[in-house]
Image (spheres, rainbow over the protein chains, first blue to last red):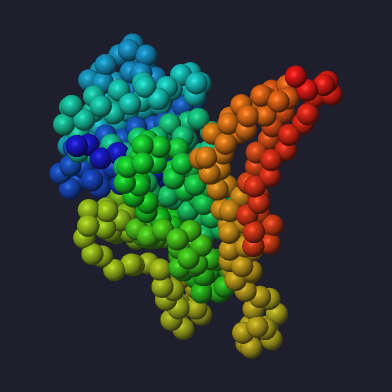
Length: 271
Length: 87
Ligand SMILES: Nc1ncnc2c1ncn2[C@@H]1O[C@H](COP(=O)(O)OP(=O)(O)OP(=O)(O)O)[C@@H](O)[C@H]1O
Ligand SMILES: [Mg+2]
């Protein structure tokens, strides 16, 4: 069975696409045949983050409408052997996505032997976001340690629990994971930012990791390389840990404690 | 932040304010977003059937709601009767 993972948040700009790119790459690096689908119809971006924007010919809507088949539309990732990208349409609107259409795409991916399908959700709680989570087996709820993001995550959890197929059919609930991103241990230490524990207490779902706020994410997107591939980067390591935990491995949480800079660094300033 | 408060560590902790506000808000929104119990549509349908035996009412004239006051759940049935005579 292909496992469907939705990366969702309610609020926009919190790091869903960054996370979808890194987690799908991480699963592929572990040897799983993985597809990552951009559900942000009209505002496609995953192709840029994955660095395959110049190879887009067909998109999700073309496949849903039968104008292209999956073999034609899937783009092979340039970094990982087992990873394929299905871009969103840039010209159509969200209404072109139908539940039957999405279901068929997911079934076909399953027949093609995919182990994981990662769905990069658009922001909001409208049709596009609901489509992305409808068939999910697991959900990664991306949350920034900030009031509006936490509130919106709670909203999207409510939608997962009422509108997903699993909920409607009364099957075992969608497995929920909290991923706190853009985390700044220093600001937490200073009492300026909610801690990951606060966020977890508020949302009451299991934590799968915390991704530090880092300039590396911009560097990665500039080059079209998912952040998980960066060398010597905390963000890359943090995403690798998330993938490991997702696969059931035990990894202690890293990059969440603030280390005070030494006296020398304080006097002469580092970065 | 002043130099004094830096040394004496009396910083305003906005994160704890945020947490408190969120915990109230989320509790409130969760209870507001509770799905309506699934017997409500059926109850509404049957009420219409029974009442329309005696009075001429349509589905829109009957509202069935579940509410909360203090610690009690309240089932509220609101029937708007037409002005004409009973059948
Ligand atoms: N850990 C991080 N540290 C610093 N910047 C980050 C981090 N994660 C994401 N960003 C930045 O935040 C911005 C939004 O990221 P991204 O596009 O992944 O969010 P999104 O949730 O997919 O947005 P949208 O809702 O518009 O689809 C980008 O500029 C990205 O570089
Ligand atoms: Mg996005």
